[in-house]
Length: 271
Image (tube, rainbow, N blue to C red; front, side):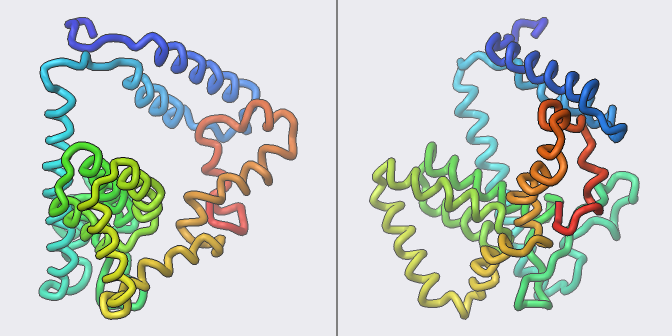
């Protein structure tokens, strides 16, 4: 910002200050003694970056979009090769760097290796470079959205959809089906509409042979309170109802940043 490359977005700055004031109030008045100071500081630093913006000039947005597209394409190819490559190199070797890199530089606590339901000898692709299959699926869903909005390449879109499928992850699928069909219909792109119709028909005809049921059955995870789908999308509402809303103080001020750690193993459902 001091060099004149970045500029402060005043509405964002105001919203940032309001949010930080609310979080400070929550820390002071709603704290349970479980507040994580490092978690709070990380939140401040991360969201402070959104106060700044780059001036829209010199094709910078287009360049950024193309860079994202190129990186997503590279990761998609790596993830697809990784998935089918486990036929040659079975086991977890292609899905984690734990055997190659020092433990100190590896992020722990993530599910690198997750078997495909119904295919116990096969693991879900994590894109080779990403932490979990869910991260890979989210990237593929975002890449599909960017492709439809900006570039309109059916071949590139098929590549991202293939990456999404070999991730066998519900997070990216939910994002994809919630947004992509609406964009396709809004644009009225006949080629993309036909592409999705063909893919849907192929899914119905060859779903069993392609083991697509391992993907569609993940929808049922929302009814299981011990699943990752429940933990990501539904458990926050249960946690608010059980922990925050019964008390007026926590309803008004929350429990403070980082306080959720105390409830990870304290509930009957996955948090």
